[in-house]
Length: 133
Image (cartoon, rainbow, N blue to C red; front, top):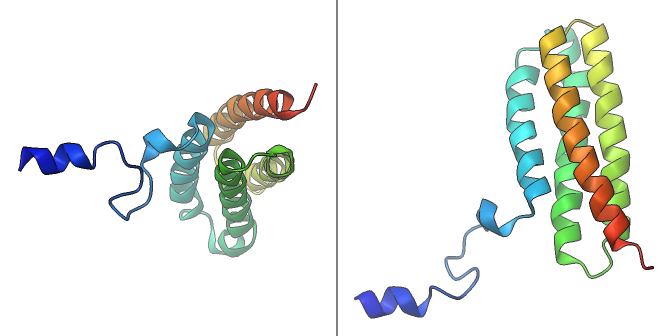
């Protein structure tokens, strides 16, 4: 039996499921974590804003995550990384709006700002390294 487990140990995707966090770039894992945190907050938005600002904010962050994962699989990453960067700008604007509408607290707004700044720095570094010299 132990021979069977070592046979598949080196093959990627042999389980048929989605790749684990170790297979995804660190920035995508960070974005996934931010998304989970954000989804909990959006679920508590007032009904008037949950299905407008909240949904758009979640969709913007989902799009960012999608572009980060796509970039990790492409040879030319610039298009997806640029799209992720634009999405991050949209998400920051939507979070500022959510804060102005009192859907999130000051502390939650600052938490999102810190996390999105770190993700933005990582994204900027990846974008710079993806540009041909």
